[in-house]
Image (tube, rainbow, N blue to C red; front, side, top):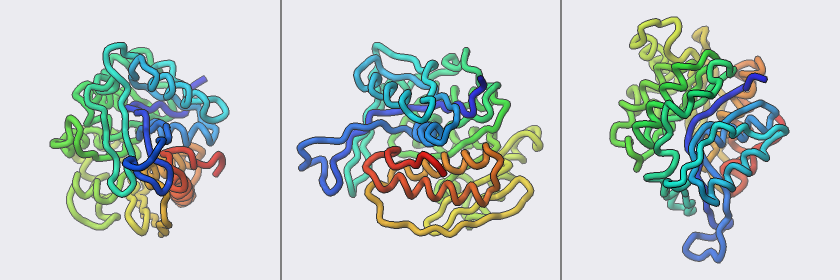
Length: 309
């Protein structure tokens, strides 16, 4: 049975204090898992899609916990058969500190050496869609190469979220490293500030049109390379450029959040779900916004994600 989506990227053990507390004062921390690509996989699995996550984890208790949690998601679980275990490198860890952001402990992690060879037996070409984010491009030279290999091997919908991050192996060259991912995708899901950093200033619509045009101009085959659909998330609205050149806008309200981390990944899951089911861009924007808002209600990247749209 073919998969609806295959995602490639790192997932970490996530630690966070209970609501209203800080790491400094909490007597216990909430234990969860988090990763841009696997967060989106969780959302899609809960909505009934057949998804697989490809990565590397340490041969440790943190890796065991992550695999068990992902396997239990959705009606059929997330397929993790192509996740390698590394006896010499640990699973990465992230610690959330309210008001201060996130601190990562992922240098030298098992996922930092994900390589193109890890995709050798993965049925990438048979999947309806693939997903990779800029995080994978930035955690190491081998993951960067693996992300490109995933996009090059795909025959279905190729989805990229730039997801620019600081403090990683390739963060100082993040525009240079992430642009090749964008040039190889069909659907680009991005924040406005990220897209501005990658391609220059402008409003959301201008950024979307430039991202589509520039990527196709740089590609050898304009009809086959470069994003044909571009979504741009901003503070008060979300816009989407369709393959026919139409521009769609959804105004959004940002309510108080218990934990805003993971909202972008949840938006991506809702948007992708509607588009894979043949829904319109407008319906996809509304579904993505609902999913993004839902996950901000819990101290978790995924706990609040709905099980139906």
